[in-house]
Amino acid sequence: MPSLQRSEENGYVGARRRLVERLREQGVRDPRVLEAVSEVRRHLLVDEALRDQAYEDVPLPIGDRQTISAPGIVAAMSEALELEGDETVLEVGTGSGYQAAILSRLAARVISIERIPGLANRARSALDMLGVTNVVVHLGDGSRGRPSEAPFDAIIVTAGGPKVPEPLIEQLAPGGRLIGPFGPRGQQELIRVRRKPDGEIVRESLGPCRFVDLVGEHGWMG
Ligand code: SAM
Image (cartoon, rainbow, N blue to C red):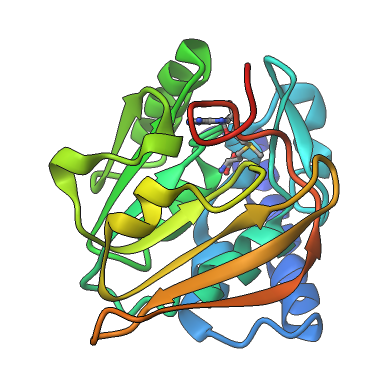
């Protein structure tokens, strides 16, 4: 690697270390999640002009009026999924591929769905560039889930819908967890849904949040 590129990469390592400290102060505890944040090169997933902001705890534009979520919410949602490493996870809303890259280090397999073709293609290339091999990106309406590959141990929805899509609850394995932003546009609650081993469904709110729209059959109309 040329020396300028090497010193840039070293700078990003330091920026990631500071980000991890900030997330720890904000209450993220799971060491596997913190390690994943310290390793995933988020600067490679944003426009070159935005790279110096890549390790600030902010969402950034990725084109098509969509965003790469802020690292803090990515870490908090990843932690709330309580992953141990052997799970199959469904992600709705691939976007840049950042959340999928984090999940790839926390679970065995990630199936991610994106509705915008250009973003799905870019995310596939980005995940390849990051050396991620256990994430598959599909193009489609993730609000319907992916019945052919269900049930899932965990489901993460990274766009805000009016309510938890019923097909996603149906595709949750016994003991599985689903997390996502649901409620009125622009002022959702982060909701976690658990399917207990006996099949009972339990919902809890983890606080307010703000995401771009989940657009689809079980989301908002496009
Ligand atoms: N997880 C992404 C990341 O790490 O960069 C950020 C996701 S961005 C906040 C929300 C994404 O959800 C957008 O890329 C949007 O196109 C996508 N989306 C919205 N509705 C969708 C749907 N029904 N199915 C699949 N993707 C959807």
